[in-house]
Image (tube, rainbow, N blue to C red):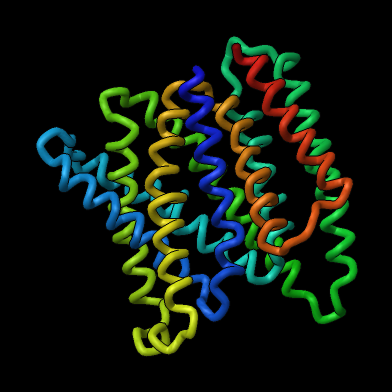
Length: 299
């Protein structure tokens, strides 16, 4: 259980980076950022499969199709919606909307033998934390100029991203438990290659041309962001999350996803060079207590 907990928390820390990257790469479209990140993910996965080709299991045709479908749902599609929502609505509101995923996963993935009374403390603390954060961010949204309709379009896109990843989390955990013969690393590599192929096709269809990308001033930062989120938030985080999904219940994995929200807010405050407001600090405390309460309930 400890291995699963540490893996889930580490995955959350790596995923949290993706919420600030769109703000670090101005001038790069959401499509180009999504494609760059997941092409890096696919390249790393393909390299790992090549280096371990003698011991790495090859997927069947059905498993390959499953990996492709799951990659469209939980990686390329999810992050494209999320990146565009951050462009329109900033970092904090999409972070909070994505932060409700643990609630949905906990409610939909509760083990049969676990009583609701055991989940209730962690669930309530997470909800209270989200309420505090939402109060702060909606106050900010109310101060937007009249032409700020793009903010609410960003909220809608973030809701779409939330739905994609909630479904992915449930299906991914169920698939891994049905196929114990497939290791966490193998499944991450299969998803990575499928994601890389999909991302390359996305760039060919909707991405900027090479000349446009070559004219951007911040090419070094763009390359670093794509590699860091592709290898770190993509390949490494996928392996860690698969480890957690194999060792923990779906509901506990869902609660651990709150760590993604905590780290995303932390990175955002560091990037902006500001301290969190009192309500945001209390929300972070409630998020942490919610994780601890959920761990206790599942022991």
